[in-house]
Image 1: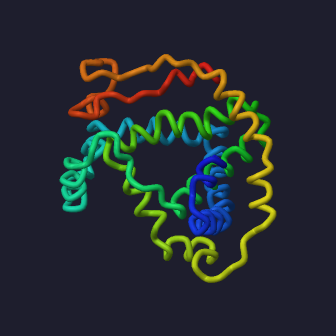
Image 2: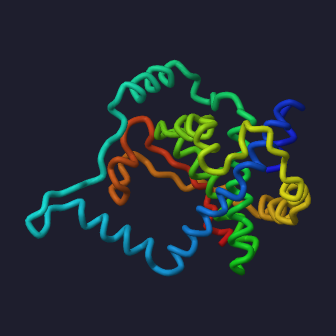
Length: 228
């Protein structure tokens, strides 16, 4: 995570820290709620009930998961990606990076205070994101939505009033980011990472069809379960 910061220009580093400072606690607020919803069993109950609504029951119609990629925005994006080199991930935006790293660090702190081991914390907060979620979002054409969302200043102004209004950085947050012992733990986990990839091919009938169609048929997760 520090390497992301260190890869930026001096101006980019300032923007990264502004975003980090503004978004850390709003992210923690959401993550704290999510954690306790899962711990209390509320989240899984909601998921099960939503799955049951995919089908007709009790005289009510079915409400399956819909497709959202049919609008003009998605069609334009599809044309752009069609001419983009396969290995081109696009530029690194400092503000987006600051928000994303703040999200990771906020989750790390929530899990740490809840008593989880560093291997679990790093797998859930960092490895699964870098090795699984990010490539999956990129392949499924939703990564640009994250960038678009966090580039909306009014969204953050409504949430915390810190972005783009001259508020000073939270220096304690910044210092904690650079000095957090999790960075050393990440290095250890990186040394223990296996090299075997787990893939989802197009003919994997044990995976939902929408996750294995078209050109997006492989989702590598780099066997990160071994770090639990």
